[in-house]
Length: 125
Image (tube, rainbow, N blue to C red):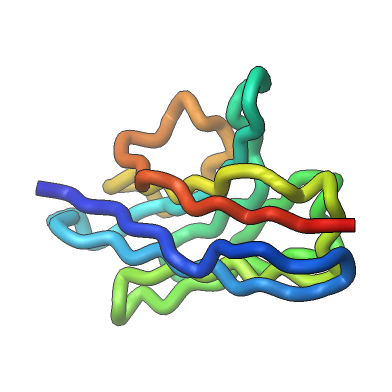
């Protein structure tokens, strides 16, 4: 059974940093794609960042480019999202997603098979 578990959310002030982690277990495929998405009440879940299994291909949504960095430790099946210079508009529930069997970066939430429970990030002004 595949499990996706996020951690690292919290309440911070504008300009602060946070680091989210996401660990995947139970995936039998050697390769997988992973991504971060976020959602606020009343809006659709939106793409934040994605990375391939080897970590040599990444993609970012425009609002987070230059501030967020996605990375992966595939020896531990763990993906990270380093969030710097946080803004109040970054406030959301952040979700991790995994897609086994893919070696490319995936930015569409419709493609991912497995999702975590989400972790709340709140940025106060």
